[in-house]
Image 1 (cartoon, rainbow, N blue to C red):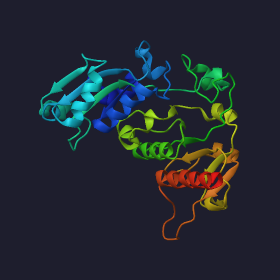
Image 2: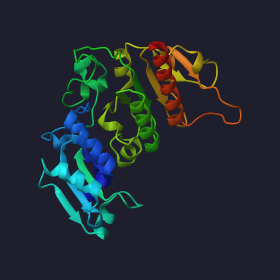
Image 3: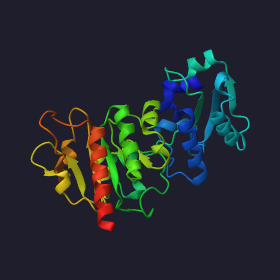
Length: 299
């Protein structure tokens, strides 16, 4: 089951958490109440009875089973799920582990809460009406037709899993708790994204396969895009209010859909030696400049 999940994560609605750090973040989220939301959709059609992010299986390598850090994780797991832990010999563990450099010692297989926009929140797009199932309270206030008024990031076809994970990690570190992933964006609960995000999944609400025409009418905050030319400097722009930050595709940039609807266009000043920043680096610069301005205003 574990080895199969590595190739069929999206279709089967599962995710693999590698190592002590992600295992700890997952267990903390379950204890404190994670912001993640579960829904029934095409990705998890065969798992409709599963609770959000339910633990399905734990695999530990024999050589790591007695490490203090892993013993601590296992003790927390076994207080609730005493029958989910299996110890594999090292050779077998290496076969099922998606990590090639070794050393993680522990893998957790969980139900991945692939979430989508729901028509019950005012999304009248054809794509949203066709979504199976319903989404639990997702937007601020949780009311029907609610408007999104909190800081958020919109991943507009960001294809590289490392970039997606890095953007989520930076967003979480900057205090952003809501992310929307548009079609063409790497699968959020894939192993590579989870690895790069370093636990951001468990402190954010992440909504996948969001139709842009369904999301745009829900945004009650200014839409911000980055641009290389004809835009105001990021450092001269008022970023103290909540904003919807659109981060575009690595090659094509932000799509025309969002460029046409942008309320703010900003550029990150840089030397002429490099044309542009990587999208994940640009996201980090933008989000932490916003954080700096907000903190300065609060003093």
